Length: 293
Length: 236
Image 1 (cartoon, chains in turn blue, red):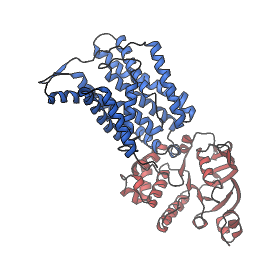
Image 2 (tube, rainbow over the protein chains, first blue to last red):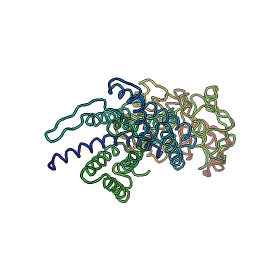
Image 3 (tube, rainbow over the protein chains, first blue to last red):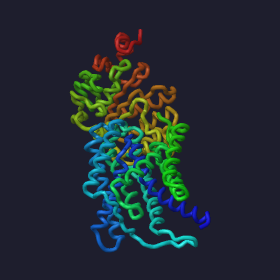
Protein backbone atom coordinates (compact mmCIF):
# COMPACT_ATOMS: atom_id res chain seq x y z
CA UNK A 1 0.00 0.00 0.00
CA UNK A 2 1.25 3.49 -0.84
CA UNK A 3 1.81 6.11 1.82
CA UNK A 4 -1.37 8.04 0.92
CA UNK A 5 -3.91 5.31 1.62
CA UNK A 6 -1.84 4.15 4.58
CA UNK A 7 -2.01 7.66 6.06
CA UNK A 8 -5.73 7.76 5.40
CA UNK A 9 -6.24 4.50 7.28
CA UNK A 10 -4.14 5.79 10.16
CA UNK A 11 -6.12 9.04 10.23
CA UNK A 12 -9.42 7.13 10.33
CA UNK A 13 -8.18 5.03 13.22
CA UNK A 14 -7.01 8.22 14.91
CA UNK A 15 -10.36 9.90 14.38
CA UNK A 16 -12.22 7.01 16.02
CA UNK A 17 -9.88 7.18 19.01
CA UNK A 18 -10.19 10.96 19.13
CA UNK A 19 -13.99 10.80 19.07
CA UNK A 20 -14.23 8.44 22.05
CA UNK A 21 -11.43 10.22 23.87
CA UNK A 22 -13.15 13.57 23.42
CA UNK A 23 -16.34 12.20 24.94
CA UNK A 24 -14.52 10.64 27.90
CA UNK A 25 -12.32 13.67 28.52
CA UNK A 26 -15.33 15.98 28.29
CA UNK A 27 -16.80 14.16 31.29
CA UNK A 28 -13.59 14.63 33.27
CA UNK A 29 -13.36 18.27 32.23
CA UNK A 30 -16.98 18.98 33.17
CA UNK A 31 -16.50 17.53 36.67
CA UNK A 32 -13.29 19.45 37.20
CA UNK A 33 -14.68 22.65 35.72
CA UNK A 34 -17.83 22.81 37.83
CA UNK A 35 -16.79 21.00 41.00
CA UNK A 36 -12.99 21.51 41.04
CA UNK A 37 -12.66 17.78 41.65
CA UNK A 38 -9.94 15.69 40.04
CA UNK A 39 -11.80 12.44 39.51
CA UNK A 40 -9.19 9.69 39.43
CA UNK A 41 -11.97 7.09 39.22
CA UNK A 42 -13.13 8.47 35.85
CA UNK A 43 -11.53 5.57 33.94
CA UNK A 44 -13.42 3.07 36.10
CA UNK A 45 -16.74 4.63 35.11
CA UNK A 46 -15.59 4.08 31.53
CA UNK A 47 -14.75 0.45 32.32
CA UNK A 48 -18.11 -0.02 34.05
CA UNK A 49 -19.85 1.30 30.94
CA UNK A 50 -18.10 -1.31 28.80
CA UNK A 51 -18.73 -4.18 31.24
CA UNK A 52 -22.39 -3.22 31.58
CA UNK A 53 -22.66 -3.04 27.80
CA UNK A 54 -21.38 -6.62 27.56
CA UNK A 55 -23.81 -7.67 30.28
CA UNK A 56 -26.82 -6.03 28.64
CA UNK A 57 -26.03 -7.28 25.13
CA UNK A 58 -25.47 -10.85 26.35
CA UNK A 59 -28.82 -10.78 28.20
CA UNK A 60 -30.75 -9.59 25.18
CA UNK A 61 -30.86 -11.95 22.24
CA UNK A 62 -31.96 -11.28 18.69
CA UNK A 63 -30.32 -8.78 16.41
CA UNK A 64 -27.09 -7.28 17.86
CA UNK A 65 -28.45 -3.76 17.30
CA UNK A 66 -31.24 -4.43 19.79
CA UNK A 67 -28.88 -5.27 22.61
CA UNK A 68 -26.57 -2.43 21.66
CA UNK A 69 -29.30 0.20 21.77
CA UNK A 70 -30.39 -1.17 25.15
CA UNK A 71 -26.77 -0.94 26.32
CA UNK A 72 -26.54 2.69 25.12
CA UNK A 73 -29.43 3.48 27.47
CA UNK A 74 -28.89 1.14 30.42
CA UNK A 75 -25.11 1.36 30.87
CA UNK A 76 -24.89 5.17 31.21
CA UNK A 77 -27.94 5.24 33.47
CA UNK A 78 -26.54 2.64 35.87
CA UNK A 79 -23.10 4.28 35.84
CA UNK A 80 -24.73 7.67 36.46
CA UNK A 81 -26.61 6.29 39.46
CA UNK A 82 -23.42 4.75 40.88
CA UNK A 83 -21.59 8.06 40.40
CA UNK A 84 -24.40 10.03 42.03
CA UNK A 85 -24.32 7.63 44.99
CA UNK A 86 -20.53 8.04 45.26
CA UNK A 87 -21.00 11.82 45.21
CA UNK A 88 -23.57 11.70 48.01
CA UNK A 89 -21.78 9.14 50.18
CA UNK A 90 -18.16 10.20 49.73
CA UNK A 91 -17.41 13.50 47.98
CA UNK A 92 -20.12 15.53 49.74
CA UNK A 93 -18.94 14.28 53.13
CA UNK A 94 -15.45 15.52 52.31
CA UNK A 95 -16.90 18.94 51.52
CA UNK A 96 -15.42 18.61 48.02
CA UNK A 97 -11.99 19.35 49.45
CA UNK A 98 -9.64 19.22 46.42
CA UNK A 99 -6.95 17.08 48.05
CA UNK A 100 -9.22 14.76 50.02
CA UNK A 101 -11.31 14.02 46.93
CA UNK A 102 -8.22 12.94 44.97
CA UNK A 103 -7.45 10.35 47.63
CA UNK A 104 -11.11 9.36 47.84
CA UNK A 105 -11.45 8.85 44.11
CA UNK A 106 -8.24 6.77 44.07
CA UNK A 107 -9.99 4.57 46.63
CA UNK A 108 -13.10 4.53 44.50
CA UNK A 109 -10.99 3.45 41.52
CA UNK A 110 -9.83 0.31 43.33
CA UNK A 111 -13.21 -0.48 44.83
CA UNK A 112 -14.91 -0.38 41.42
CA UNK A 113 -12.07 -2.22 39.71
CA UNK A 114 -11.94 -5.04 42.23
CA UNK A 115 -15.73 -5.36 42.28
CA UNK A 116 -15.61 -5.74 38.50
CA UNK A 117 -12.85 -8.36 38.81
CA UNK A 118 -14.76 -10.40 41.38
CA UNK A 119 -18.09 -10.29 39.54
CA UNK A 120 -17.28 -9.93 35.85
CA UNK A 121 -13.96 -11.72 35.99
CA UNK A 122 -10.57 -11.24 34.40
CA UNK A 123 -11.58 -12.18 30.85
CA UNK A 124 -11.85 -9.76 27.98
CA UNK A 125 -15.24 -10.22 26.36
CA UNK A 126 -16.40 -8.95 22.98
CA UNK A 127 -19.64 -7.17 22.19
CA UNK A 128 -20.98 -7.62 18.65
CA UNK A 129 -21.20 -4.47 16.57
CA UNK A 130 -24.81 -3.32 16.08
CA UNK A 131 -24.31 -2.85 12.36
CA UNK A 132 -22.17 -4.89 10.08
CA UNK A 133 -21.13 -3.26 6.85
CA UNK A 134 -17.86 -2.25 5.34
CA UNK A 135 -17.16 0.84 3.35
CA UNK A 136 -15.00 -0.14 0.41
CA UNK A 137 -12.34 2.39 -0.46
CA UNK A 138 -10.25 1.76 -3.58
CA UNK A 139 -7.33 0.63 -1.43
CA UNK A 140 -8.93 -0.98 1.60
CA UNK A 141 -12.25 -1.70 3.25
CA UNK A 142 -13.16 0.08 6.46
CA UNK A 143 -15.64 -0.77 9.21
CA UNK A 144 -18.84 1.23 8.82
CA UNK A 145 -19.42 0.94 12.54
CA UNK A 146 -16.22 2.86 13.27
CA UNK A 147 -17.46 5.75 11.17
CA UNK A 148 -20.74 5.64 13.08
CA UNK A 149 -18.76 5.96 16.32
CA UNK A 150 -17.31 9.25 15.08
CA UNK A 151 -20.74 10.57 14.12
CA UNK A 152 -22.41 9.42 17.35
CA UNK A 153 -19.67 10.93 19.47
CA UNK A 154 -19.88 14.26 17.65
CA UNK A 155 -23.67 14.26 18.09
CA UNK A 156 -23.36 13.56 21.82
CA UNK A 157 -20.85 16.39 22.24
CA UNK A 158 -23.16 18.73 20.38
CA UNK A 159 -25.87 17.64 22.78
CA UNK A 160 -23.70 18.47 25.80
CA UNK A 161 -22.95 21.87 24.35
CA UNK A 162 -26.64 22.58 23.73
CA UNK A 163 -27.56 21.55 27.28
CA UNK A 164 -24.86 23.78 28.73
CA UNK A 165 -25.66 26.86 26.67
CA UNK A 166 -29.39 26.63 25.98
CA UNK A 167 -31.08 25.13 29.04
CA UNK A 168 -31.84 26.23 32.58
CA UNK A 169 -29.90 23.26 33.93
CA UNK A 170 -26.89 24.33 31.89
CA UNK A 171 -27.16 27.90 33.16
CA UNK A 172 -27.30 26.61 36.74
CA UNK A 173 -24.17 24.53 36.11
CA UNK A 174 -22.26 27.46 34.67
CA UNK A 175 -23.34 29.78 37.48
CA UNK A 176 -22.26 27.17 40.04
CA UNK A 177 -18.93 26.83 38.27
CA UNK A 178 -18.12 30.53 38.59
CA UNK A 179 -19.42 31.23 42.08
CA UNK A 180 -21.18 28.53 44.10
CA UNK A 181 -21.89 30.79 47.07
CA UNK A 182 -23.64 33.48 45.04
CA UNK A 183 -25.43 30.75 43.09
CA UNK A 184 -26.97 29.53 46.35
CA UNK A 185 -28.03 33.08 47.19
CA UNK A 186 -30.01 32.93 43.95
CA UNK A 187 -31.81 29.71 44.82
CA UNK A 188 -29.60 27.40 42.75
CA UNK A 189 -29.45 24.03 44.57
CA UNK A 190 -25.68 23.69 44.38
CA UNK A 191 -25.65 20.27 46.07
CA UNK A 192 -27.99 18.83 43.46
CA UNK A 193 -26.05 20.51 40.65
CA UNK A 194 -22.87 18.82 41.93
CA UNK A 195 -24.54 15.40 42.09
CA UNK A 196 -25.92 15.90 38.59
CA UNK A 197 -22.61 17.06 37.14
CA UNK A 198 -20.68 14.18 38.69
CA UNK A 199 -23.22 11.71 37.35
CA UNK A 200 -23.21 13.38 33.92
CA UNK A 201 -19.41 13.25 33.77
CA UNK A 202 -19.43 9.53 34.56
CA UNK A 203 -22.21 8.95 32.02
CA UNK A 204 -20.15 10.56 29.27
CA UNK A 205 -17.29 8.16 30.06
CA UNK A 206 -19.73 5.25 30.04
CA UNK A 207 -21.17 6.35 26.69
CA UNK A 208 -17.67 6.52 25.23
CA UNK A 209 -17.04 2.99 26.47
CA UNK A 210 -20.28 1.59 25.04
CA UNK A 211 -19.31 3.05 21.67
CA UNK A 212 -15.81 1.56 21.79
CA UNK A 213 -16.66 -1.88 23.15
CA UNK A 214 -17.60 -3.45 19.78
CA UNK A 215 -14.09 -2.43 18.63
CA UNK A 216 -12.10 -3.22 21.77
CA UNK A 217 -13.23 -5.82 24.26
CA UNK A 218 -14.61 -5.23 27.74
CA UNK A 219 -12.00 -5.87 30.42
CA UNK A 220 -11.77 -4.87 34.06
CA UNK A 221 -8.45 -3.03 33.56
CA UNK A 222 -9.50 -1.13 30.43
CA UNK A 223 -10.00 2.14 32.33
CA UNK A 224 -6.31 2.96 32.69
CA UNK A 225 -5.50 4.28 29.22
CA UNK A 226 -8.63 6.44 28.88
CA UNK A 227 -7.91 7.95 32.31
CA UNK A 228 -4.33 8.81 31.40
CA UNK A 229 -5.28 10.17 27.99
CA UNK A 230 -8.22 12.12 29.42
CA UNK A 231 -5.93 13.79 31.93
CA UNK A 232 -3.46 14.62 29.16
CA UNK A 233 -6.25 16.09 27.06
CA UNK A 234 -7.77 18.08 29.90
CA UNK A 235 -4.39 19.53 30.88
CA UNK A 236 -3.45 20.44 27.31
CA UNK A 237 -6.89 21.88 26.58
CA UNK A 238 -6.94 23.92 29.77
CA UNK A 239 -8.56 22.68 32.98
CA UNK A 240 -12.29 23.23 32.89
CA UNK A 241 -12.38 24.53 29.32
CA UNK A 242 -14.74 22.35 27.31
CA UNK A 243 -13.71 23.89 24.00
CA UNK A 244 -10.04 23.24 24.78
CA UNK A 245 -10.83 19.70 25.87
CA UNK A 246 -12.47 18.80 22.58
CA UNK A 247 -9.70 20.41 20.53
CA UNK A 248 -6.96 18.72 22.56
CA UNK A 249 -8.80 15.38 22.26
CA UNK A 250 -8.72 15.71 18.49
CA UNK A 251 -4.99 16.54 18.52
CA UNK A 252 -4.03 13.78 20.95
CA UNK A 253 -6.46 11.20 19.57
CA UNK A 254 -5.41 11.75 15.97
CA UNK A 255 -1.69 11.75 16.72
CA UNK A 256 -2.12 8.71 18.96
CA UNK A 257 -3.86 6.85 16.12
CA UNK A 258 -1.42 7.90 13.41
CA UNK A 259 1.74 7.32 15.43
CA UNK A 260 0.40 3.97 16.63
CA UNK A 261 -0.16 2.82 13.07
CA UNK A 262 3.18 4.06 11.69
CA UNK A 263 5.41 3.43 14.67
CA UNK A 264 4.16 2.02 17.97
CA UNK A 265 1.44 2.77 20.55
CA UNK A 266 4.13 3.20 23.19
CA UNK A 267 5.82 5.96 21.23
CA UNK A 268 2.43 7.65 20.86
CA UNK A 269 1.96 7.69 24.65
CA UNK A 270 5.51 8.92 25.18
CA UNK A 271 4.98 11.84 22.79
CA UNK A 272 1.61 12.73 24.31
CA UNK A 273 3.08 12.79 27.81
CA UNK A 274 6.00 14.85 26.55
CA UNK A 275 3.53 17.33 25.06
CA UNK A 276 1.88 17.68 28.46
CA UNK A 277 5.25 18.46 29.99
CA UNK A 278 5.87 21.17 27.38
CA UNK A 279 2.41 22.65 27.88
CA UNK A 280 2.91 22.72 31.63
CA UNK A 281 6.25 24.48 31.23
CA UNK A 282 5.28 27.08 28.64
CA UNK A 283 1.55 27.46 29.00
CA UNK A 284 0.52 26.11 32.41
CA UNK A 285 -3.12 27.07 31.93
CA UNK A 286 -3.44 24.99 28.76
CA UNK A 287 -4.54 26.11 25.33
CA UNK A 288 -7.86 27.59 26.42
CA UNK A 289 -7.46 27.74 30.19
CA UNK A 290 -8.34 30.95 31.97
CA UNK A 291 -5.71 32.54 34.15
CA UNK A 292 -6.14 31.68 37.80
CA UNK A 293 -8.24 34.36 39.47
CA UNK B 1 -44.98 49.54 62.15
CA UNK B 2 -44.67 45.79 61.46
CA UNK B 3 -41.25 44.40 60.69
CA UNK B 4 -40.79 42.81 57.26
CA UNK B 5 -37.45 41.39 58.34
CA UNK B 6 -36.72 40.79 62.01
CA UNK B 7 -33.46 39.28 63.15
CA UNK B 8 -33.25 38.21 66.76
CA UNK B 9 -30.19 37.18 68.74
CA UNK B 10 -28.11 35.79 65.86
CA UNK B 11 -24.88 33.89 66.60
CA UNK B 12 -22.73 32.93 63.62
CA UNK B 13 -19.30 31.35 63.29
CA UNK B 14 -16.55 30.97 60.72
CA UNK B 15 -15.23 27.60 61.77
CA UNK B 16 -14.57 28.07 65.49
CA UNK B 17 -14.41 31.84 65.42
CA UNK B 18 -17.60 33.48 66.54
CA UNK B 19 -18.34 36.50 64.36
CA UNK B 20 -21.87 37.43 65.38
CA UNK B 21 -22.85 37.67 69.03
CA UNK B 22 -26.61 37.91 69.40
CA UNK B 23 -27.07 40.41 66.58
CA UNK B 24 -30.61 41.77 66.28
CA UNK B 25 -32.25 44.13 63.83
CA UNK B 26 -35.61 45.05 62.36
CA UNK B 27 -36.55 46.51 58.98
CA UNK B 28 -40.11 47.58 58.16
CA UNK B 29 -41.75 47.70 54.74
CA UNK B 30 -40.72 50.84 52.93
CA UNK B 31 -37.84 51.51 55.27
CA UNK B 32 -34.10 51.72 54.74
CA UNK B 33 -32.02 50.45 57.62
CA UNK B 34 -28.30 50.93 57.38
CA UNK B 35 -25.74 48.82 59.21
CA UNK B 36 -22.74 50.97 59.97
CA UNK B 37 -19.52 49.89 61.57
CA UNK B 38 -15.83 49.35 61.16
CA UNK B 39 -14.14 46.80 58.96
CA UNK B 40 -14.61 43.35 60.44
CA UNK B 41 -17.50 44.41 62.68
CA UNK B 42 -19.67 41.64 61.21
CA UNK B 43 -21.88 43.61 58.81
CA UNK B 44 -21.24 41.41 55.80
CA UNK B 45 -21.51 38.30 57.95
CA UNK B 46 -24.88 39.52 59.19
CA UNK B 47 -26.17 39.60 55.61
CA UNK B 48 -24.65 36.20 54.86
CA UNK B 49 -26.22 34.77 57.99
CA UNK B 50 -29.63 36.09 56.94
CA UNK B 51 -29.11 34.50 53.50
CA UNK B 52 -28.09 31.21 55.13
CA UNK B 53 -24.67 31.32 53.46
CA UNK B 54 -23.13 31.35 56.94
CA UNK B 55 -25.77 29.33 58.78
CA UNK B 56 -26.59 30.93 62.14
CA UNK B 57 -26.23 28.60 65.13
CA UNK B 58 -28.53 30.51 67.45
CA UNK B 59 -31.26 33.03 66.83
CA UNK B 60 -34.19 33.62 64.53
CA UNK B 61 -34.61 35.33 61.16
CA UNK B 62 -38.26 36.22 60.69
CA UNK B 63 -39.36 37.19 57.19
CA UNK B 64 -42.87 38.60 57.30
CA UNK B 65 -43.52 36.61 60.48
CA UNK B 66 -42.06 33.28 59.27
CA UNK B 67 -38.80 31.92 60.65
CA UNK B 68 -36.44 31.24 57.75
CA UNK B 69 -33.26 30.69 59.76
CA UNK B 70 -33.49 26.91 59.45
CA UNK B 71 -33.98 26.87 55.69
CA UNK B 72 -31.14 25.99 53.36
CA UNK B 73 -29.51 28.92 51.58
CA UNK B 74 -31.01 27.98 48.22
CA UNK B 75 -34.51 28.05 49.73
CA UNK B 76 -34.10 31.38 51.51
CA UNK B 77 -33.77 33.34 48.25
CA UNK B 78 -37.08 31.82 47.15
CA UNK B 79 -38.78 33.41 50.16
CA UNK B 80 -38.16 36.78 48.55
CA UNK B 81 -34.83 38.20 49.67
CA UNK B 82 -32.78 39.88 46.99
CA UNK B 83 -29.06 39.98 47.80
CA UNK B 84 -26.46 42.29 46.31
CA UNK B 85 -23.20 40.91 47.68
CA UNK B 86 -20.08 42.86 48.47
CA UNK B 87 -17.87 43.21 45.40
CA UNK B 88 -20.96 42.52 43.22
CA UNK B 89 -20.09 38.85 42.67
CA UNK B 90 -21.53 38.69 39.18
CA UNK B 91 -21.19 35.48 37.20
CA UNK B 92 -18.45 37.20 35.24
CA UNK B 93 -18.21 34.70 32.36
CA UNK B 94 -21.95 34.83 31.75
CA UNK B 95 -23.67 37.52 29.74
CA UNK B 96 -25.77 40.29 31.19
CA UNK B 97 -28.92 38.50 30.00
CA UNK B 98 -27.83 35.25 31.63
CA UNK B 99 -27.10 36.96 34.94
CA UNK B 100 -30.60 38.44 34.91
CA UNK B 101 -32.03 35.06 33.90
CA UNK B 102 -30.52 33.53 37.06
CA UNK B 103 -32.36 36.14 39.09
CA UNK B 104 -35.60 35.37 37.27
CA UNK B 105 -35.18 31.61 37.69
CA UNK B 106 -34.81 31.86 41.45
CA UNK B 107 -38.53 32.41 42.01
CA UNK B 108 -39.90 31.87 38.50
CA UNK B 109 -40.49 35.59 38.24
CA UNK B 110 -42.66 36.83 35.39
CA UNK B 111 -41.01 38.35 32.35
CA UNK B 112 -42.02 41.88 33.28
CA UNK B 113 -39.70 41.72 36.30
CA UNK B 114 -36.86 41.80 33.80
CA UNK B 115 -38.44 44.58 31.75
CA UNK B 116 -38.74 46.59 34.94
CA UNK B 117 -35.02 46.15 35.67
CA UNK B 118 -34.14 47.23 32.15
CA UNK B 119 -36.34 50.30 32.59
CA UNK B 120 -34.53 51.21 35.79
CA UNK B 121 -31.11 50.62 34.24
CA UNK B 122 -31.46 51.24 30.48
CA UNK B 123 -27.72 50.81 29.97
CA UNK B 124 -28.12 47.09 30.70
CA UNK B 125 -30.58 46.72 27.84
CA UNK B 126 -27.87 47.83 25.43
CA UNK B 127 -25.41 45.30 26.80
CA UNK B 128 -27.58 42.18 27.15
CA UNK B 129 -25.26 39.90 25.20
CA UNK B 130 -22.03 41.28 26.54
CA UNK B 131 -20.04 39.23 29.06
CA UNK B 132 -20.81 40.78 32.42
CA UNK B 133 -17.14 40.76 33.45
CA UNK B 134 -16.42 43.31 30.71
CA UNK B 135 -18.87 45.94 32.03
CA UNK B 136 -17.64 49.03 33.84
CA UNK B 137 -17.75 49.04 37.62
CA UNK B 138 -20.93 51.08 37.75
CA UNK B 139 -22.65 48.92 35.15
CA UNK B 140 -21.64 45.82 37.06
CA UNK B 141 -23.19 47.25 40.20
CA UNK B 142 -26.38 48.05 38.31
CA UNK B 143 -26.45 44.48 37.03
CA UNK B 144 -25.89 43.10 40.53
CA UNK B 145 -28.83 45.15 41.78
CA UNK B 146 -30.88 44.26 38.69
CA UNK B 147 -30.19 40.57 39.23
CA UNK B 148 -31.48 40.85 42.79
CA UNK B 149 -34.53 42.83 41.66
CA UNK B 150 -35.42 40.08 39.19
CA UNK B 151 -36.59 38.13 42.26
CA UNK B 152 -39.17 40.88 42.91
CA UNK B 153 -37.95 40.84 46.49
CA UNK B 154 -39.82 41.96 49.59
CA UNK B 155 -36.46 42.57 51.24
CA UNK B 156 -33.42 43.89 49.41
CA UNK B 157 -30.00 43.62 51.03
CA UNK B 158 -27.12 45.63 49.59
CA UNK B 159 -23.54 45.23 50.77
CA UNK B 160 -21.50 48.39 50.10
CA UNK B 161 -23.18 49.07 46.75
CA UNK B 162 -21.46 52.40 46.14
CA UNK B 163 -17.92 51.27 46.92
CA UNK B 164 -15.49 52.61 44.34
CA UNK B 165 -18.09 54.13 42.01
CA UNK B 166 -18.24 57.51 40.30
CA UNK B 167 -20.59 60.12 41.80
CA UNK B 168 -23.05 59.90 38.88
CA UNK B 169 -23.37 56.15 39.37
CA UNK B 170 -23.77 56.55 43.12
CA UNK B 171 -26.55 59.03 42.47
CA UNK B 172 -28.38 56.64 40.13
CA UNK B 173 -28.15 53.75 42.58
CA UNK B 174 -29.35 55.99 45.38
CA UNK B 175 -32.38 57.03 43.30
CA UNK B 176 -33.27 53.42 42.60
CA UNK B 177 -32.99 52.46 46.27
CA UNK B 178 -35.27 55.36 47.24
CA UNK B 179 -37.73 54.35 44.52
CA UNK B 180 -37.83 50.81 45.90
CA UNK B 181 -38.44 52.14 49.38
CA UNK B 182 -41.35 54.16 48.05
CA UNK B 183 -42.77 50.94 46.62
CA UNK B 184 -42.67 49.30 50.04
CA UNK B 185 -39.52 47.21 49.76
CA UNK B 186 -37.65 46.74 53.03
CA UNK B 187 -34.04 47.71 52.37
CA UNK B 188 -31.08 46.60 54.45
CA UNK B 189 -27.97 48.50 53.50
CA UNK B 190 -24.43 47.86 54.67
CA UNK B 191 -21.98 50.74 54.44
CA UNK B 192 -18.67 51.79 55.88
CA UNK B 193 -18.76 55.41 54.81
CA UNK B 194 -21.08 57.73 56.66
CA UNK B 195 -21.57 60.15 53.79
CA UNK B 196 -22.98 57.31 51.66
CA UNK B 197 -25.55 56.49 54.33
CA UNK B 198 -27.01 59.71 55.59
CA UNK B 199 -28.79 60.78 52.38
CA UNK B 200 -30.77 57.54 52.06
CA UNK B 201 -31.10 55.77 55.41
CA UNK B 202 -34.15 56.07 57.65
CA UNK B 203 -32.45 54.50 60.60
CA UNK B 204 -28.86 53.56 61.31
CA UNK B 205 -27.83 50.56 63.38
CA UNK B 206 -24.27 50.58 64.62
CA UNK B 207 -22.53 47.22 64.62
CA UNK B 208 -19.47 46.56 66.74
CA UNK B 209 -17.66 43.26 67.28
CA UNK B 210 -20.59 41.28 65.92
CA UNK B 211 -23.09 42.91 68.28
CA UNK B 212 -25.83 45.35 67.44
CA UNK B 213 -25.35 48.55 69.44
CA UNK B 214 -27.18 51.87 69.21
CA UNK B 215 -29.94 52.32 66.69
CA UNK B 216 -30.81 55.91 65.81
CA UNK B 217 -32.82 57.82 63.24
CA UNK B 218 -30.56 58.99 60.44
CA UNK B 219 -31.92 62.52 60.80
CA UNK B 220 -30.68 62.64 64.41
CA UNK B 221 -27.25 61.44 63.46
CA UNK B 222 -26.20 64.65 61.77
CA UNK B 223 -26.19 66.40 65.10
CA UNK B 224 -24.71 63.57 67.10
CA UNK B 225 -21.09 63.06 66.20
CA UNK B 226 -20.28 61.12 69.32
CA UNK B 227 -21.82 57.91 68.00
CA UNK B 228 -20.05 58.19 64.68
CA UNK B 229 -16.82 58.82 66.44
CA UNK B 230 -17.27 55.83 68.70
CA UNK B 231 -18.33 53.22 66.13
CA UNK B 232 -16.81 54.38 62.88
CA UNK B 233 -13.99 56.58 64.07
CA UNK B 234 -14.94 59.68 62.09
CA UNK B 235 -16.77 62.88 62.86
CA UNK B 236 -15.97 65.81 65.10
